Length: 360
Length: 212
Image (tube, rainbow over all chains, first blue to last red; front, side, top):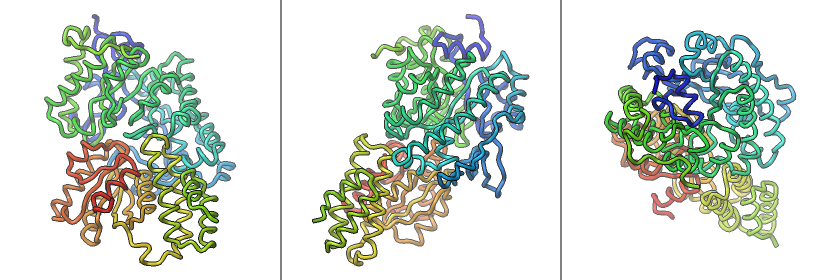
């Protein structure tokens, strides 16, 4: 097959068609890891050097505004206090909304401010048509739960005050829909929504609550992207077996990372859902990519491709992100293994590929 | 006649107002505080935990059950005698370095308190050396390490290594937990116990100190 561009490779894969080789990108690659592989390079130069198929504009680091409060704490654009630790992205500590009445005077951030799209514009200028430009957005559930209400208050309100949950969700989704429209107008090729809906044991809330409070808002984002001809990918860690179908029914074109740490098997996901949705993942970045040998990384990557690569529909990635604990040589080994074992037709390399949709 | 079964049920249902009202009524009817605790509150929160383990309850249902239990416990505490409140054990807990999530840790604390553990909370983003200092200075049965992010799981391993390096590893049992954590990984990093969820963590903790 003729060599595809990264953009073509990714889009073909998302459409469940066989590309030339299994594509790869990461939502986040920590600076320490990048510097160890290509010292002092910009993210863009690193993506070019590694020949990644997509580049992500991460909303929290490139499009959100922050007010610095102290060395390690900032107020995010939603009003939540965020603490920064060893990773590049901070985590909410104190939510913006302390009491329901705070919402009456709450002023949400304005997604139409031009500066939010400067980074995206730079990437469009450099990579448009060659590599997929991926606009990242943090899930409505995540922003509403973490920055606005606080997780405990949000979960409580699901039972005690569902109207409050809906009100906060509406506020966030309004921002997100306008933000996504703007990103696509600027040139984003793909939308990636991240935010966990599950823990390693189970979904955070029941399937009924997922359908009532979480998936409808994700679905509106998907529809917004689809209306403009752009696919939408969903990341959630955890054991999502009980809600896998809900994510697909909401319209997700791809699901990341089929979390191996939560005991999810990407081969089983391929057999059950591989004819309906693109699978993304799932080389283990809690174990193998942190402490495995290069050979162990190669074998695990090979196995992911064997289990989920048949007939396209696999973007081979880490099982979360290339965080600061990932060994640079292991990340490089994974990328090389994808290129080595991921050449289509995979039948040339494997005789026991998992057939998509073979389990109904 | 005040029914302690109804009190248990109100906790299972997360009906805080009802649980508090029934607790007050039970105290008013002269039922000893310890009996209210042992036959009303504790069975209620344990049942909620069981439902969570079975996958019938999720985080919202468990949280409101915990709220109901803690509200009722607050009413009992002033009247529980010292001998009534001997703890099951002493539990030191914190979220590991690099991780500022506290919901998992706080639910575990809630369940531990409901099962009469004395809990010391070191908070979030706790460096290994701070865990070591607390273990060295206190008399704890168990140290619980919470990691809610895949990327901060290695900090739990570093904390266990730091305990070993400081000669403190044998002073305390170590449990790990958190959304991405698994039994295999817990064993791999040398933890004594692992809780896939808060209710199980409480059972594992009791087993580790021989009080199950």
